Each structure stands twice: as C-alpha cells, then as structure tokens.
Amino acid sequence: MDHIILHPISKTRILRPKEFKALIEAVPKVDHKDMLETLLFTGARYTEIQKLFKNKGWFHGNSIQMPSFKKKAVYESRYIRLNKQGERAVQHFLSNKRQLPAYPGWDKNLKRWAIEAGLDPTGISVKTTRKTWESWLVARFPQSLDLIYLSQGHNRMTALKFYLMIPFTQFDKMDMGEYTDGWL
Image (tube, rainbow, N blue to C red; front, side):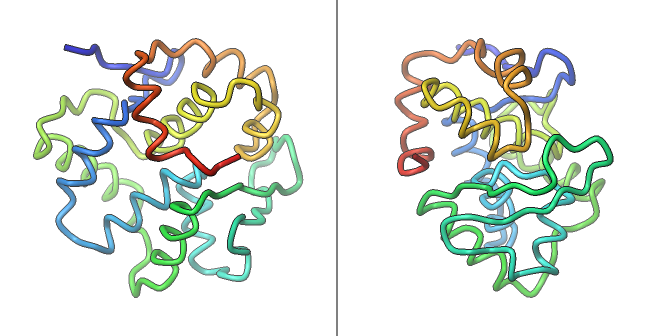
C-alpha cells in the first residue's frame, strides 16, 4: 500500500492520481465535480477561483490571466496554463449557477468525500488540489520548471524546494498523464 504524501511544510495532502480519481468519483453533485476539477486543473488558490467566477473575462480558453491578490506577490499577474481538460473544467465551472462555497464548507466537503471514497482524510484541505497539481506537473515535466512555477505564481526556489522531490512511484507518474497530458 502506498503511503500518504504530505507537503513538507504545510502538511497538506498531495494526492496520487488514483486517489484523486477515487475522490472525484465520490463527489455526488456535478457542479461540485466541476469545482473540484477546476481547482485541480488550474492549480490556482481557492480565493483566486472564487474571484474568477465573478470575473469570467479572465478566462481565455487555454489560459486564465490571473491578477495577483497577495501583498507579497512574486508577480503582478500571471497566465495560468490549461490543457484541454482544464479548459473543459473551467468552462463548466463558469457556467454553473453556484459559486464555490465558503472555505470551511469546501474543506468539510473534501474530507467527507475522501472518507466516502475510502481515503484517509489526513492532510486533505482546500490547498490539496493546488499542491497536488504543481507536484504532478513537476513530476511529469521536470524539464519545464520555469513554465510550471510561473503558471503557479511561485519562484524557482519554491518549485525546487517543495515539489521536485515528492516520492511518486513510476505508476503514479504514468497515471498522471491522464490528467497532465497537453499541459505543455
């Protein structure tokens, strides 16, 4: 059995592809699936996706032009790259009638769905999708660290320090292709 992967600093859970698949299958409502997939495929912060819902013009098909909202932001704005699955997820999310719930509500949903999926909920939180996506991209495209950290709004040191050494198996890396293919 594979061990749980936690981010070394925040102790946020980083999902393996089979864990994400089990999680998404446990989500009962289509609009919640759209929200979860949008959070994964953009790798954006939760608050950024809440703001995107109110500013649909930021979405440009294969990318999102995301202004920075952090006081100590690395960049004034950034383009979040999307593959075809990301484009589809964001389109569906933006056509939903409902916005993402408040942060604590989404956190509870994720933990409940994890348990329903047979996953240990340890470390699963609102930050799980962002950290999972960046980890998957770094594992699949280590030669493209610059593109990854720019899309995520990080710097090279963050990408190297926290995401390059995640202990994914070869099977995990192969399974990531189902989600990450077309990102480059």
